[in-house]
Amino acid sequence: MNGAARALAIRMVPCLPDQARALIPIPRSWARLARFGIDPARELARELGMLTALPVVSCLVAPLWTPAHAGRPRGSRARPKFRVARLPPPGSVLVDDVITTGATLDSASGVLGVMFAVTATSAGV
Image (cartoon, rainbow, N blue to C red; front, top):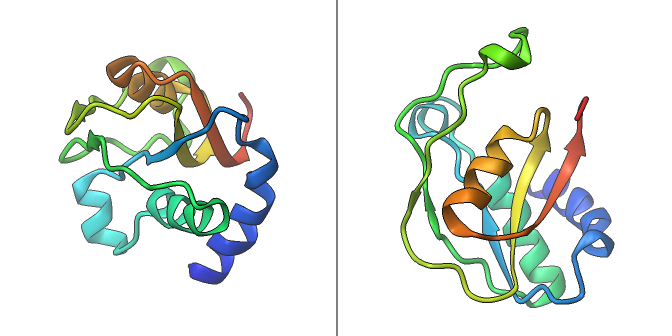
């Protein structure tokens, strides 16, 4: 994923707000991390951090499991319930690999109070 993460991160750099001071990856659920062995948002955040010299800060704890949303209507998709591991530094930006309905970013920003986010891709917002 490093090559893909680097290529995507290069294109994400211009999307960062001027006031960005730290990057917070949206963590993948523990079940998906165990199944796939990779956390795409963390990889993107690492690459963005290397390109911008911004620190990557783990502020969120992912739920143990979340249901797959592929093929489900928006109304039946569960919002992930993140827990706060630590308070975000001022100027933090959430980093995720994809945005579909925006529920994941909304949930993460709600528990942290972070107002900025960048994603690698967007599908049907």
